[in-house]
Length: 196
Image 1: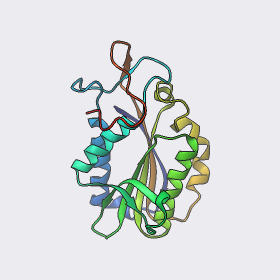
Image 2: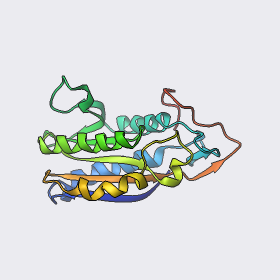
Image 3: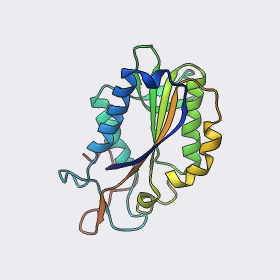
Image 4: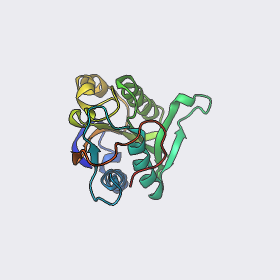
């Protein structure tokens, strides 16, 4: 798996200048680079078919690696009665706040909601910051139809950056290492943590 770009939307320069932020970012990058398909290949390859691969097992492999690094899934931010305010995974920080990560498995509307969840947590003082991980447009072509992707969300970056939220908010654009037609497709739906 490759990281193509990192787009910083908000950065007040406080948490992002700490060694703890470096650790958080290193954890995220390590979890992205650890994703491989087929298992044991040392690379992340997709089955060579348009819309031919599922997305949830890819996310699950990422989350599993972050769990191994001490992150916790589905952290409620602020109000336990608002189920839609859960963050995919979070790391508790020395400040008592959290850093949140969302990995896109839904459509472009889901991407907007993910950014809003992270921003809301930053505004409310629960999150020091957050990351949304999105596939590149090239990778998108091989995934479940209409999954949110970097290029489709890019026109809204200016609006998303227009916030007084304290902390750091960024988007990481990822891409597969290649395609092959002699490997199984990544199954769609809830297939468990099938990769890595």
